[in-house]
Length: 196
Image (tube, rainbow, N blue to C red; front, side, top):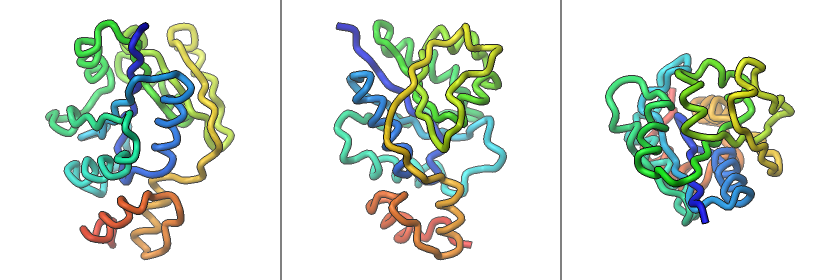
């Protein structure tokens, strides 16, 4: 039986319930052997630098996914110099798991701009994609790449949470609700992250 390896990349600034929901939905519905959670060192399509350091974001991801035995925290992008392109990571994973079915897990917001990802034609030969619908955003890929990619739409209960909203709440000293796992919330408090 073919091994199925999920890939969940992101800035994880901070990691939250939505990230865990996406990974869990993909793992369950696509019968994945593992989901590699890969925090970005320096993400190319992000307007601003992460507020938390790569070391802190990696630590928070480890805490967030600790209850998920199928999650493998992969620090390759944190260790990489310069901008982290998904296609470079996909090339490495294709070498690491040459016989596996490799599935990149994304949110609907990322799907809408997937055509802007570097070397998307090559990337689509290295991985297929799984998209988690959120906030009624379309799960139809951009027309220019629709025929090139293999896409699975994941079903999961909606999780109303975003890293941007969580950072703002934390900066203003407001409650972050249920969006953060307790272990992550404790880490943020202990290290005084996201304070103004």
